[in-house]
Image 1 (cartoon, rainbow, N blue to C red):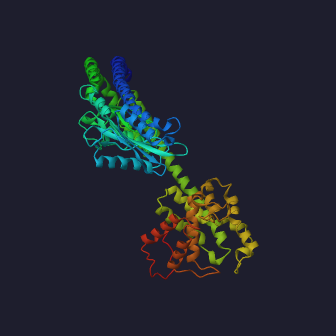
Image 2: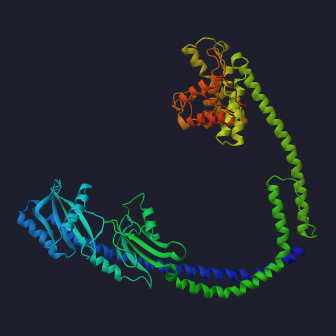
Image 3: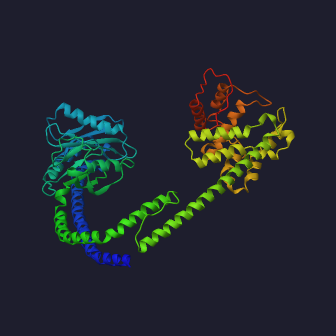
Length: 570
């Protein structure tokens, strides 16, 4: 009953929680609304700025591009008519500073170059042509814009556009456009009391805008909104993007929105410090939180008084339960209370002792079972090796070497045990091969070799019904597969060969080279590793061969100058 009373009192205290939840939900909901309003305002602002920026860029661009669609074709007109069309564009659009016509060979056409300013400096003319030729040489399929540069006369940023005329191409046109109007528009744009808007090219360099950002061409790619945009555009640079949210951290955090002008790939960005954009949010939060503070304080004090008698025993239960979960059977809870918690502690201690007894019994059974499995496996392997004196002990050695390679490759203990079994059983299928072929001292005929190559599939069929050997079937069936896909029985290639089978194949080849056989004497280790290196990438997995070398190095074996065959330490 004591626990019941404590819970009852705690429930009475917790009745304050609904009030707190309502207050918290009010804060969260109102905060979300105010934040959404601030972000929607930034979103709408940047959309309007984008429309204005597109208008500043599209109107003169359409006027220049319109030359390519004059009746009869621009390049079919008399030279005087061509000049008059060019002059008309310069007169009608003050944003067009220069216009140059190029032939199909990308050479400037004589007399078809005009400038809005008659006393244009030669250097400015050269720079205009240089930007135009860079666009032509990049290969044009439509209108394309150059990087923005500063006007020599201080008239604002200048961009060069170029486009082909005719299909097939009869020539090209290039024009310089001033962005002075765009600069003036962005300079007058106000984003709250401290925010500003600016325009940047696809490489993160400043085109124009408000704020203390520097001159045209200044690198602003590290500003949080632009840095986010450039990362988004890495995979698809021509995709039209739009985003609004918080960028940056600490005092440098800003509420920003950006959008991309699809034709030029420029980004129009609006920034405002978070502390100014969300000022209403902070004011609202303070008012609501102050009202909730008193109620929460009272609830905390009362909850601490009435819950202490519950939390201390529960902490003890939690700590002891974790020890039990980690396998420390037999651990007990030292709790002397004469209530429901005390009875629970006694029940827990009884359960823990029973688990300890079951665990000790299970461990003994498991060790006996595993020992019996291993003895059975060794007996099966010995039955194979006994047919041929030259291969006696081969299966055990392959298993040992495979385990050391697997340990070097950071395999788990479970996988290492599977390697041990797989190495020992890899040739179990030879039980099904007639002894005259198995022990033949001379070269096998093609028919005999085909019969011998059946032993992986035979071995797989032998151990298939044995459930606990399921994970090692791959070692038995695929230890003669080759890295280049020319092995047998399934002609697997590369990583499609199970890793354990690749390791057993390497260990099998290593033992074959360093053991005496009817057709060869045991090789020196240096010669054996030379052969394995030659087989690496063709028959054997290169990573497994490197792991075998690392095993030898860890055992202090030096390949240079070594002339005696060695057996790896088990």
